[in-house]
Image (tube, helix red, strand yellow):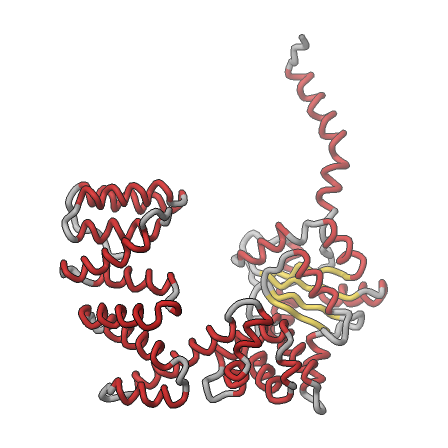
Length: 422
């Protein structure tokens, strides 16, 4: 047996560090090498001399996605190999802190100027410049390594460069393909208003064949539902091609979008009505959307009676919806109705209805949410022991972060106190 005295331990430790130093060095250098230049002028000079593009990571000390990029993406060998070969890389801290190094402080003025000139509002923002310091591309937000490298490669491709695409859509008569690419680039730069405008232009110029492309369908859906109404071309395209679109994508993307936008129109009509006449609203919607009017007006009425806490009418219309449109009533929607009723009323006959609805869903299912609702209803109607049993089941199958809150409710039940509204 070798006994290590203090001196021997120190020598051995130094030997290990010396042996492992190349490994440490390799680990530190395998990712992106950020420049130690102290200002933008020096970076421009280096880029021109080495014939490289410039990559600028605009970040802040408080930005969690920035930290995630620095830790999980910038440190990877595949990322470092590409970025170090093609770019002068600048790690640009936009804000300041008392712990900033001398090099970071030397960048304060340039950081402020770059932020102002290039309208950096969100973090992280990635800016890409050519060898002459001209901005060619930009994107915003955390990206996984593959998506990040794809954006980096776009900086060299005029068909995908942000600046090149914006120049092309602002001059002449851009093709639908260019408009769609520009909309995607604007979204990646987090310029959502510009992206929405480009999507509208795309819809107005593209053929049905172009619009039916799977990538096009999936991209433009967000902008249709968030920026258009049922009077706009996006909705009308989805409406007349719903079955084809659903078939191409593989799930009811068009049907769901159509229902959502019609529901928004119904809600707006109800909100604008001084006196609500449900028959008039139904006739109006049925004339425009005969396939969806009955279901969606019913759902609007359910929401209305929930807000008014008219639980008798709420129950009546949920039952009507189940009877007439059971196949269209999604499990999550029905569970939400149960949850709303269970937490909204203390009237025993209404709680019994909620219990009946939930029992049909919860039996023989390992579902935390349904078990919590079952426990809540049982406790409110006075079946304490059954309620405690269901609450314990919920605790058993819940994920660890959620267990403490459920345990607190269990204690409240055991002490016969009023349980909180979820």
